[in-house]
Amino acid sequence: MRMVDLIEKKRNGQTLNKEEIDFIITAYTNGDLPDYQMSAFAMAIYFQGMTQKERVHLTEAMVNSGDQIDLSKIEGIKVDKHSTGGVGDTTTLVLGPLVAALGVAVAKMSGRGLGHTGGTIDKLEAVPGFHVEITNEEFIRLVNTNKIAVIGQSGDLTPADKKLYALRDVTATVDSIPLIASSIMSKKIAAGADAICLDVKTGNGAFMKKLEDAEELAKAMVEIGKGVGRNTKAIISDMSQPLGFAVGNALEIKEAIDTLKGKGPKDLTELCLTLGSHMVVLAEKAENLEAARTMLEEVIENGKALETFKTFLAAQGGDASVVDDPSKLPDAVHKIQVPAKENGYISEIIAENIGVAAMKLGAGRETKDSVIDLAVGIMLNKKVGDEVKKGDALATIHSNREDVQEVIDMVYDSYKTVAEKVKAPTLVYKEIH
Image (cartoon, rainbow, N blue to C red; front, top):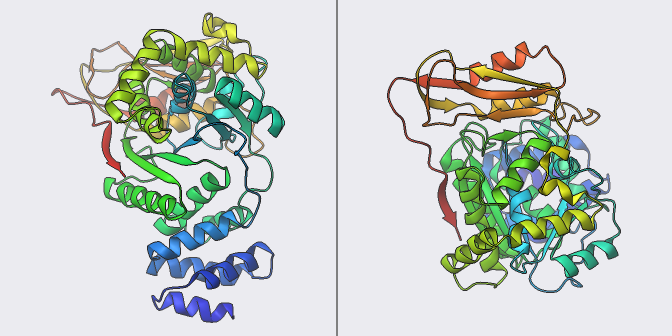
């Protein structure tokens, strides 16, 4: 087999078979294929696309390029959840203990964030003492005992994806549905889950700005999941404004606690109940989504979800008393309100701008070496559809430095106000089975 022939074949819109795709991914992972040929191949996929079979073969080849996590010693159906990311996306912090309270095994492998705010691990580390440096044996024991544990990404999972992703980033081939879908799904499959629940975001704060693109990606990932024998569902949810009110690590932990108490923001609560219902059904703990939702609402009301969160934190060294006393979480020195300049109704909040503003405060990483300040961030006081009067606080900036004029300006630039009342955006657009 010659790579130049395979590039030509894909360039001409023909279909590659499993052996050909395996050859390409193996050679590239081993360093036997130069970047310039892989770049040409990625560009051919960008323009010609891939069939469903090709996408499955590509995903499988990337899974087989490195380690795979064996979760077989964990009892029950292991359900993983993946979000395509956004601003204030606190869902994992709520969903984990929420579904674990119903006996769903949540064996979560998470990473650190690069961007607006920290990743799930960074957020959890806002809880004093919490750590993810545990052995695989301890990880499995904790999931079997408490139904939930989080571990840092270990081993050499999907090295082909890491190499290809870095190449796509510098060759203008990032936004290709087959390449995005196989990248996400290869990591989920290598992480060992039996079933996968996907939250595909759309809107100005999401990777997929247009609903039709988000739908195409969701369908591609669900079909890949099914193609490799994993029960996979997806929902498409809104990220035209930040989810919930909190953007920042300790702030999002507080918001997760409020949500598990039944006192969280409406949109975050609704999204967690929607995703959680799918996870409970995928885990075969309920026959349908309606029954699953009722069960989830019950464990919020009776406090079991909150107790599960405490148990989870304590089991990994965290100070679980922060759940009852959130003042023990890192707290910023300065709280600076951003007052509204006019009366009206909030018509838009540019999520991406709010995310970047939080990063400027230190809530996220601009580079891999950036150090996160766990205390800082932005609390939104008004969301789309809310009435606002001149002088009302649009948002509160939590900062450890006094000079935040740049961040104040970014918050003002993010908010749009109109005279006429507007509706809040749709939260969940579609479910893809």
